Image 1: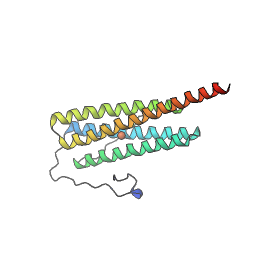
Image 2: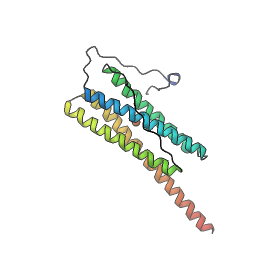
Image 3: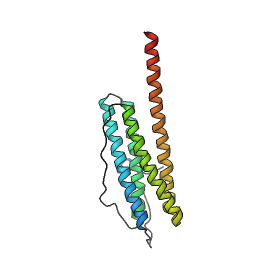
Length: 176
Ligand SMILES: [Fe+2]
């Protein structure tokens, strides 16, 4: 079971800093960009959760909070890897959360955030595979798979919403 980023909710993550640190500037660059994107996406999910609460959609709000927690777990893994290479996060630049007037708009904006992460991790995986950085490749591959799985969940969530809207419209027409 993965450690929580919230100290009160789980055990702190554990890793051993290697005695001989070999770091690659491009790998560190990928780690830094990924960290900014993960935090930005987590922030965006939390903003969508708040908007859903104001629309009185508690189930959707809960879904966004769950997704945000997964992004902060990804940030945790990235910082572990940075520290393992003798580095720490520098100043992260976050992209702003964007507004949405409906759950559909929220989910569409989340799809865009997911695609940016998938693109970054695909590139990082290719670089690490070519350079034979096995541990970094393993981390970026894991993150890529988890982002792809999250995108599928967001896609299914959106499809489910559209299905419920169309069945409600059919019901309305049926009662008319
Ligand atoms: Fe993530």
